[in-house]
Amino acid sequence: MRALLSVYDKTDLDKLAKYLVENEFELISTGGTYNFLSDKGFQVTKVDSVTGSPEILDGRVKTLHPKIHGGILAKRENVSHSEDLSNNGIDYIDLVVTNLYPFYSVATDINATEDQIMENIDIGGPTLLRASAKNFQDVVVLVDPADYSLFENNWSTNKFGIKERKYLAGKAFQHVAHYDTLISEYLRGNDEFSETLTVALTKVSDLRYGENPHQKGSFYKLDSTKLPNQGFGSFVQHHGKDLSYVNLLDADAAFNLVNDYSDNAIAIIKHTNPCCLAVGNEELDVLFEKALTQGDAISAYGGIIATNKNIDMKFADKIRTLLSPINGIRMFYEIVVCSSIDQDALDHLKKKSKDLRILTVPNVDTSYNWQTMRTLRGGMLIQDSDLSIEKEFELVSVRKPTKRELEDLTIAWIVCKHVKSNAITFVKDGVLVGMGAGQPNRVGSAKISGEAAQNKAIGAAAASDALIPFPDTIQVCAEYGITSLVHTGGSIRDAESVDIANKLNLSFFTSGVRHFSH
Image (cartoon, rainbow, N blue to C red; front, side):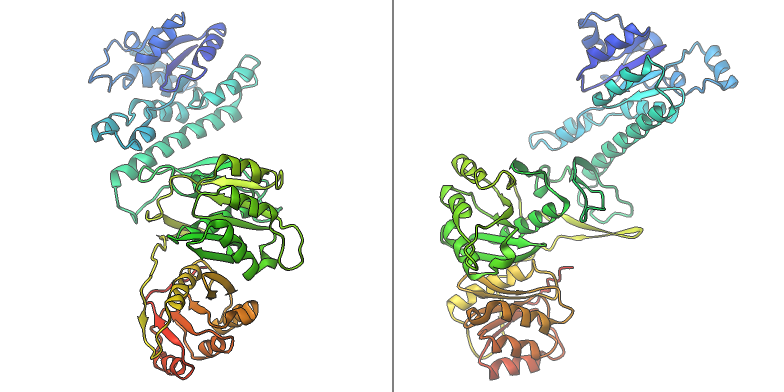
């Protein structure tokens, strides 16, 4: 039996080599792997002794030779193959152990040159993997050191069958596909909507279940050479229970919302919709209390807290101690997510509950245009992320807003972008006081927002995530006390809406941009 070993990652390679020698495998190896095994005291045959050809082109060509690939690809039961090997002095290779140059880590190193990146595109390794995986009935392929134990535990007991061989072959092809996807992405540059598309994902963890207990679920991190370790996929969990599918959706939605604001912002999210929000220059503990006491505190119970700033001890203590303004009970939260947290604040917050999940998401570049992807049955929708944040609107009414109203209008507009359509949001003094989401008509969302706000809507600003098609939505908002309102504009009845706004003495604006969220 012969085993070819040519690896970059040498984790547990010496243990595997020891097992192979004990099971009468001849070891064949290349370059650095040969030196590693020789230094460990193993008797190893150099690849160039097998091929009769030296390594050339600074090691670019080592294993690309008929005496290597013939020995891998030959079918043992094929008489013609056996004759070809015999006529050309080629012996079978029964086991291939290889993994690849670290292209991804080099390509994402800001100090790496293009020449260095190109030199880390492995050629011989993927070829070995593909050849041995294709011939899995006769050749075992190991690409992951984590699988060495699978081989060792089953080979000598004759339990290593077609099922195990096929599994490892599939893993080898997947490894090459992931590797090639990252190379392709790097070379394509900004070709975001190419004719064919593959995506590189690495599993972070299996989840307890999917969106519902009868569904399976897992979380995968997006690997990208364009912006590595950015976004919610790079989160660190410091405390609490394992995350669920819904937890991750909500935490991502919450973190995206607060990071659309440059001022201090805190939000509480439930089912991806914000139920509490406060934005301003005050410290986070002050904003948190305002958000909870003036927002939808009923929905906040069991919600996800997010902020775009560092959590200090004062804010952590407020999260721990602030009671429900509705009934005075102790508040329960699923997750706290932020960009960073002081150590004393983290230790203090851990005491609120052993189950409270505390996450940090470092190195977030909110300006990077991630593509969003949603699956259909048998297809996928891909689009640019909605990163547009409008802070200047066109006044189309007679009445001009106060400075505070205009500030609230901007806050309402930004949060409205993160509410499921049709969306209407009411903001007063930097605090979300009403939110209507997911209604098939805009009037319904306005009524829900108004009922939630009640008298807190008096003097508040309102935002609509898309154009207001009829004046009735404006009338409903005015009935609850709204004094300024922004919508996309562009309806054929815009003139009617402006007329109603003037009659009701509202400041009425258009943004020129729609923010549907489905």
